[in-house]
Image (tube, rainbow, N blue to C red; front, side, top):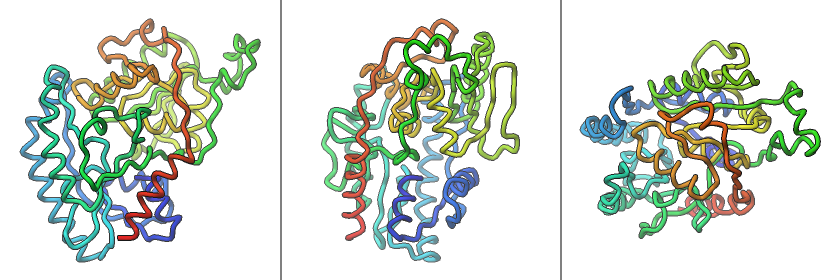
Length: 356
């Protein structure tokens, strides 16, 4: 939502952000002076043992309840704030007949675990019915063969109110950071570890607990064995402690976007979950990564498989992580990110929206 909010503010629209406590804190850090209101969300506590899709199925009745509940919370917000437009980040209950509503999602075809993927097309009628409740559905991706979401939002009949808006990244408009191999001439690459600014590996932690902490611990153990300068971005936004140092590893809770982009650019290897927001941001910075999906989360598992099949990213399973598997990497080539074409897609969608 951050690049979308910035775009609306730049075009002289007043934006009110509604989210839970940590979301509001993040937005206030990234967009100074924005008005925020508390809007409770539905959070699933995942398990260390059971697959994520099992936990999701068990929590499905609660998800339905919270979807209905947020629909009525929106009614109260409309009465108090009188907005012209409500833009929802994948919250399917945030539509209202009295105002213009937009659903932002890259999931039109709901992903299933691999053995049950043949059932995915059965979810399309329900997805279309949900999307048709909204004035528009914005898909943060490209419409052609070069796309990041694959079958999640392509190769199916889309409702007429859907629009591809290009990828959404906090780093749109940032200059592409140079990778370590680009900063040094070929003859100097053997000496790059002598450069104090050189980072061997940056691991970007995100996603639900406790899996986020389990992965961070596993990666830390592997990176400690390398003895090379590395960074773990723990993603703990509300944490007071900013930086911890443990031998050759810096553990950083959260960084402003310019420092984040700089660290990504200085890193030889990047490791992250295959969450869609992270994938879009890395793509916009021109950096590939090792993608480790959250175990049992079908969306992340599919995205990691799809993007590694394109040879844009590398897919590794969390249970198979080791020093050998993590750093014996094939050559990858990302397609060029056309920032101007990406901007045109977003501008066209917003122009149509604001004419309503």
